[in-house]
Figure 1 (cartoon, rainbow, N blue to C red):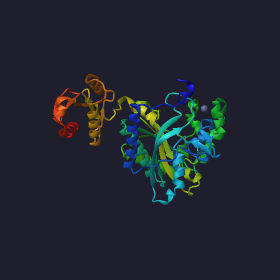
Figure 2: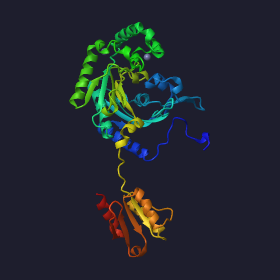
Figure 3: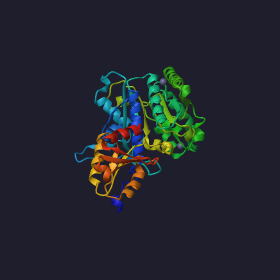
Figure 4: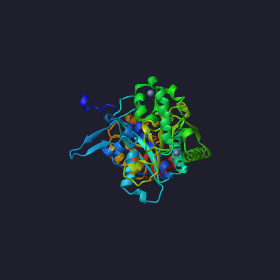
Length: 415
Ligand SMILES: [Zn+2]
Ligand SMILES: [Zn+2]
């Protein structure tokens, strides 16, 4: 195939059975969220660029990682790199702050980022997330984290671990920032080039650096700077999580560098992945909706999880829900009746397919063996007498039944 016809670099075609597994995860995630009261919101996959410039994790995304374009009407648009900003925009634009609070929302869909291609980093990837609007209380943070854990558990990773931190609030964080800058200034000459810039632009992210790990060990801990409210919020949250039976530990290096993030930052991991690896994270961002012209005080907390990453961890022991498919095979000359019978069975609620290649019965049975649980055979004398053959591939049991008794038999067998 010519290069110009191939899929864009860093993207993937999601084929069966991976697509089936992804679909199953989507159902589990959305269904679990619904049980918690979080209802699905679908926003456009592109927004006006300022939505992502102002807010969201994406402010961190350097310009060249955004898929931005000007459409023929001259409007500056960007393919969404994450869900949180788009949901905040929808919350404000649809006046959801006028509804009874809290408002519980979730989303699922593709996100776009022009990343350097590497394993599991796709330029289009799928994210599920939840957002809770309208409560500043630690119970809200707890519920969101419990939902995140429930989804992880339901897709097959029991006992997720929670790492949590608080980055304080506008009252207490400035003092911490100063202390952090002071400490890192003294180490400046030993820092990596990125961190030398970060001291001035985004000091909290100094703690994030994967290179200067030794230096951060001695850095001041934000815990010592929490105001009374932040301190109470943190201890109530962790207590609620422990009381709910979850494993929680504090990670003092877990931070977000953006101004509208406050208090809770968390990551969900799993013992099987090692102690520092995270599946995904979330946090509180009480200033986010306000930055998009929302009301003055619009508290929010949420998370976003990458589905491809989650699937890569659970895939080994992930079973696709069995499709008890009926394969309608036919003797030569009975292609028509077999297609019609398959259609009748589908209308009665059975997943069913028939041969479309006019193959020999032997070839059809071989084909059926690859994907079906039961074969119905149409043709011959039995058909003339209103009967069909039925064969269960698993155990080889075979019988002949009246056509009108077929559905009952299949139904009984699948129970
Ligand atoms: Zn505070
Ligand atoms: Zn560094």
